[in-house]
Length: 329
Image 1 (cartoon, rainbow, N blue to C red):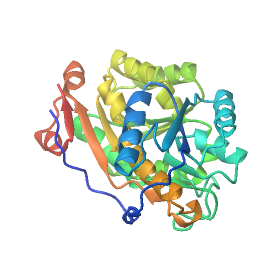
Image 2 (cartoon, rainbow, N blue to C red):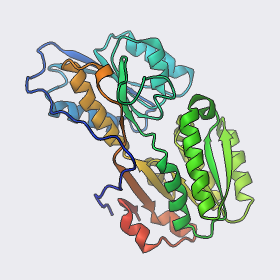
Image 3 (cartoon, helix red, strand yellow):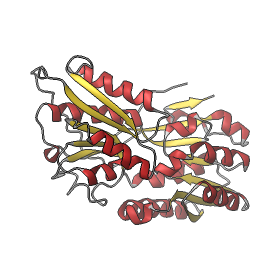
Image 4 (cartoon, one colour):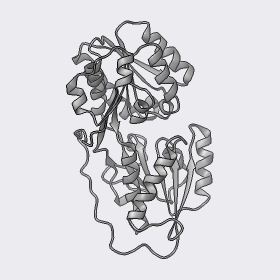
């Protein structure tokens, strides 16, 4: 059951979409690199990008060539990034953490990023309004999300008395501003709901398992899974462990809930890719990344898996179901 209503936005920058230039794209074939964090959602991502570019006048096999690559976490991502750069694309559209490594390799080829947090704190851009270099895009960083994760999890599991925030440990060093804001938001919401908060920084699957087992040993516990490449790569494991230990958990993206997670609240990933394609079009028509403001998410979705709720013995309040954009039964 789906409801096409968008959740309210929190402090987002205004969406500044100038109308695309009236002129048709130039006759010569333009080359666009697409770097996707991991293979699983690749087909859907490519379809979204292709359709949006087609709507703007760019047709593969006519005036456009898309070079699509996958970017697994760690060193392989750098190898793939170098391979893509060697093709000398006119612009690169990249999702998630691989953008940082890609930016280290080139300050000349235009880059549009999506699904990336705190580009200012990571020193990729000078400011959101004025990126100032060869890179711009769309960030899912929104500190208000953190408090919503705790509030929403408490609504579906009112017995909660403790919550652990699970995140990739290296994020504390790499994205201090973002993590501080998120953790402060979670801490504030937890305190307001009488919930004891713990923070679980993990490096790999083995540490994830140990953290979840330790959390499950305490009664009335719940889990907040924070967005990172690590949580994405270990999605199936986290969902399985939460189910095994009967832990209510909230996740940052719909893909977790679609795969059996209890509830998710976050940005709409495919919408980010669609918006990224619009920026690609503007750059192909002559705009400079330095002049295109980095934009924050304006659309969020709440997805609830009723089957998982029933397996955990939870009754989802009608008020929460009414707010949901999608209910999986």
